[in-house]
Image: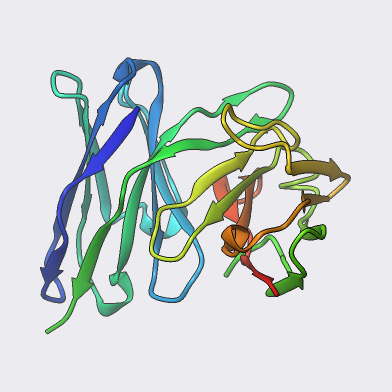
Length: 123
Length: 110
């Protein structure tokens, strides 16, 4: 099982970035993909989740207005678009296979991760 | 700002045991299962524990997890220098409707 992410990006403030995450080694449509980012020297921050089965989504509130996620089941690829970039969006962005489900409580876990895509926002 | 609190750092000698704590509330750890991740420098996080106390295939039994009330712990036994990493806990927060991560704990094997 592998998740391979797109390359590093350098963007100007106010622009958008689109990242991809190509999955292999499992049936893509059986699980979801979450996106997690990590600012330099900081911890992990969950951004959003998308079901590769039906396209359902869930977002962290702070990103709700700036994110679009899609999947292409023909290529087993998930995409994240983040708009209105600021310097605070400079981070490593990871996609992760999301094997979460509910069983008397939420069982949230990310069992395979992409290698990360570095996004640098600078004027 | 993380809602799950971890000690910033822990340390122990090779061969010893260390415990990393993760403190939350009734809206997150108190109601949901916990996961633990290991992040080696410059790499993506790696799942160590899911469902609070289960290990994925391929994870050594030197790593074990538990949960009680609104807190969880990760125990690492038989420490060696290869375990030096940052460890994060994570769960779902019902109030935030979001996945929340702990603040992260840096392990030093001295």
